[in-house]
Amino acid sequence: ALLDNPGRAAGAMALVPGGMLALDPKNAQLHLFQHTGARWVEQPSLRLPGLKEPQQLSVNGQQVLVRDDDSGALYQGTLKWQAKPVAAEPRLPYVAAVRQTEPVGRQGDAADDPAIWVHPEQPGKSRVLGTNKKQGLLAYDLDGKLLQTLTVGRLNNVDVRPHFKLGSQTVDLAVASNRDHNSLSLFSIDRQSGELREAGEVPTPLKDIYGICLFQPASGEIYAIANGKDGTFLQYRLSAPDGRVQGELVRQFKVDSQPEGCVADDQRQRLFIGEEDVGVWAVDARADQPATLTSVIKIGAQLHADVEGLALYQSAERDYLVISSQGNDSYLVLDAAPPFAIHGGLRVGLNAAAGIDGASETDGLEVTAINLGGPFSQGMLVVQDGRKRMPEQTQNFKFVPWADVARALKLP
Image (cartoon, rainbow, N blue to C red; front, side, top):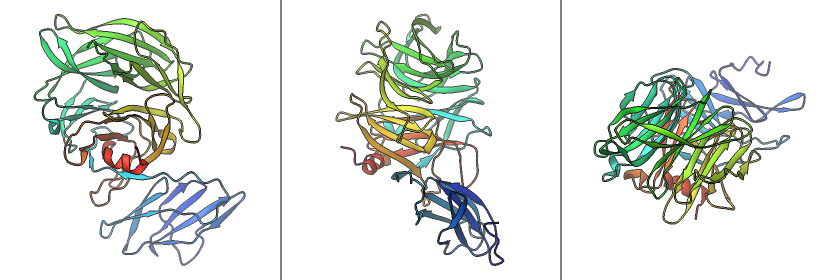
């Protein structure tokens, strides 16, 4: 009924905060309708110059993307409501991904959590690991090319740490939460080639394992901290003295509702955990210390449920905590030390020149401050993309230069 006009044609539609966007392929226009109580108010139309057959429509925050079926061209614009009868969401800056991974090999909600393995001698040969919770563990190079697929089951979250003694060998270690077996799946990483190999499993008593992160204090041992959907956290000391991996349960604690993301600050021996509908907590990461929760940030104006991925950017100058605020498709950056000052949020938007869409509904993320070369000289942010657009494909991971994040948020 909103488009009941003989001079118009109805195409794709998308909901936006406080209203609706309708694509008119006949006139190459976007019509904006704002909902004010019981009425719909039409805003000035947005023309789409140069598009002959606009068909596909995608909206991420205030950013709109339209594809022309005739030429394959993309039109990118920013929505600006003229009337403001509803409270407008604060406008967040956008950064663009400069690389993206090949789409994962399973349909639906499959890709989940990334980790970054840094090559000890040649950072350009570093790897991005990603979980496919319908398949296993994936390994990509810094251009997003798939290098390895380890089909070990429904892996949810993954983390890495260096220098693990696997029998007589020293390897780097990746650990993932395995939802098929309610276990920890361990993988060795060859420190020269970056090749991953299965290294065994550690069973847990969790009924529904979910998130995991690793903690490595200065003494060098590696701990895995896993959680279940009931809020239980289990901390294991990992070892493999005879080449067979084992885990010793050294601590257990609980939060009141479903957690998932977590990340350990090895230097400060601090663990950050996300309770999806509540916020982020800090707790002492040491196994022999009480698990006293300190609030870092609660769900509110800036952090929107679900709290998903957590990651740490740690440089010689500053340490930042990065949080996936899934409910409003954004990423929040805070100081990683009390009082946990908030530096702001941002979104990952379209890079039309590179043909890389934005990211939304992000589950896991990871970040490094290491100079990986090229656009990643100040480090890299990796985010899972819950909706792969234009072309519509299975989910994937996006690579964003940290320099662009720092610029967008004017980080000190």
